[in-house]
Image (cartoon, rainbow, N blue to C red; front, side, top):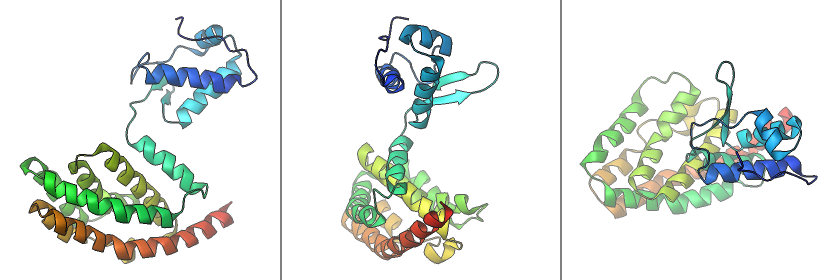
Length: 243
C-alpha cells in the first residue's frame, strides 16, 4: 500500500487511529470501501494486531467505520453524515459537560432564525415534505421512539429547508440530546409534546412570512424549554442511580 508510516511510539493505537482517520478524510478510502486486513495493516504499521484492533475500534466508535461479520466481513468506511455531529454533542451531554440549559438557550436563538430562513427559502418543492411531516404527527405511533421521531421531524425538515447545513447539523444535534432525556425519563410523551403544535410555524413558513415564522417558533420553544430543563434534573438522578 505505502500509505502509512511505521509506528514507533508508546501511543501506538492512537497514532494508527490518526493515520487511518487522515486517510479516510483525504479520500484514500472512500465511503463503502473496505480497509486492508488486520494482517496487512500490522505489516505496514509494524505494530501488533492488538494495536490495530484498538485503532479500528476507536474509528468505529468515532463513526468512521462499520464492522461487518461473516463472508466479505471486515472494517468498512462509513458515509459521514450530520448524525456524527449529533453523536459528539450527545457524548458531551451524557458526560455532564453540556447542560440542557445551554442547549435550550441555543435552540431559542437558532431555531427561530431557522424558521425565518425556511420561510424565505420556501417553494413548491418543499410543500410535500413539510405537509407529510405535519400529517405524520397525527398517525398512530408504533412506539415511543417512533413518536419522538414523528413529533420532531418538522424541526428537521425546516432546518433542511433553511438552506444552511451548519444550522441543520446544530438543530439535529439538539434534537438528539432532547430525545435522550425524553426517552429516559418521560413515561407519557403526550404530556410534554402533542401532535399539531407546529401548525402555526408551518403555516407561517408556507405563506413566506419570515417574521411570523420566527415568532411562532420562539413561542413553541419557550414553554417546552422550561420543561426540558427541569427534566434534565430527573435524567441526571436517574443516570446516577443506574450507574
